Length: 165
Image 1 (cartoon, rainbow, N blue to C red):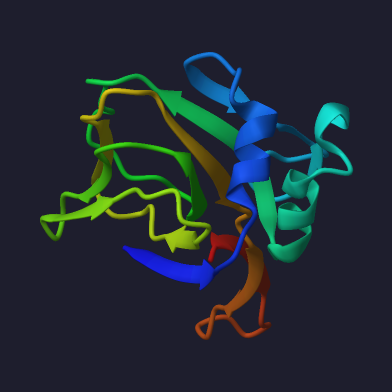
Image 2: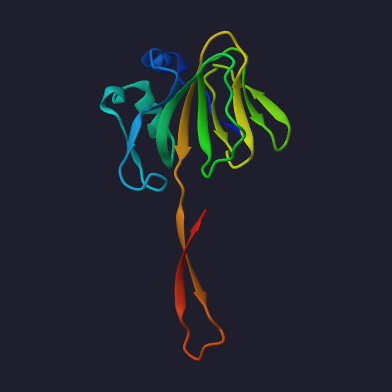
């Protein structure tokens, strides 16, 4: 469910930029077009920072947001349409839980960037004594074009079908 993609990310510098954000989902980018398929632009206040440097390293990144979860808070079980990169900025006894495979992943602020298979049924919980700060970056979806021909016709007709990859 989680795979280390990069190490030595300057998470402390990023945390210092966002540590005063309120509880909940704090979006750091704006979509340029379609939310799921097109690039997102970093908000002005974060340009020239470690957040921009990190986004420049990530191919196909979409929305970036910091999720601040209070102690004792959990999300309902869910699966997402897009995969996500996760960077823990600050946490104590906070977990991502792969409900499908019954595995818990402890979230540690250690500078590792993880790619999460968000299509699995999962949740997140904070059992600690302080708010959890997590930078979550969506992976943009790809559109592919598939041509389908009907072999029963005398004249072939092609159809364009959009599929999620």
